[in-house]
Length: 179
Length: 119
Image (tube, rainbow over all chains, first blue to last red; front, top):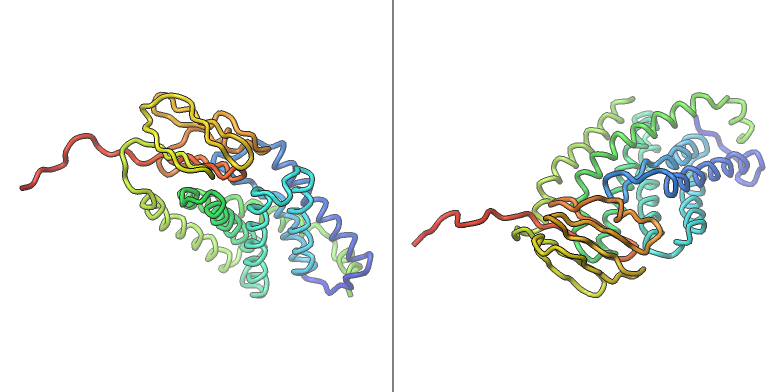
């Protein structure tokens, strides 16, 4: 259920800021602490849990704040702002956000699990496309089949976690943020 | 999961399967070589030429080791070190250091000898 919210109210800003901080922490932990996956550049996408929850509860504006805010803040923390790593992250985040936003407009046809899988696939596809531009060679596209294949279980996992979280958020706390 | 969700899953898997042979075709067959590409140019070495190859990148040098037919990145100056942890390159699985704009692509090997002789 999505709530109409006054975007300037504390009851809206506080949970969105909380989701942003969760996304930043998950993204940072994934970048720095967790070992990389066998496919170069592919990550678990844990930060997308917060983006999916934001999109499902507060809509596209909140999801944009959480997703792009995470990309900027993690780049600031890692010192990669404006560099190729930042461009890769931004490209992936924008593509995932765009596709998830489209699916979220389709009513009950797609659940958060479907959004997540689509977002995961869009994210890796966009990152590899940006990598082609950065590296100046088609070689990153060689990773596309494996990356797309792995994006399915990763997207499913993130989507199920997001759905579980959404089922545990009491309605009264969300209604306090909107209306 | 809804039907729409399953449709998304099937579409992504189908895309991955359809792209698999296409991805292999991106690289023209050329026997047992590795293309080391950086901002300053391209170098091709055969996997039989064991040694260390330094490729200057945008964020410092990336060093590749060619040993016993395997190619791997041994050091890089970027913060993520993803390429160093990527393991050995293989046909269809390049090593990419995106921050430095450097890649190592192993080209598929070609069978030695002649397939046919025609007049």
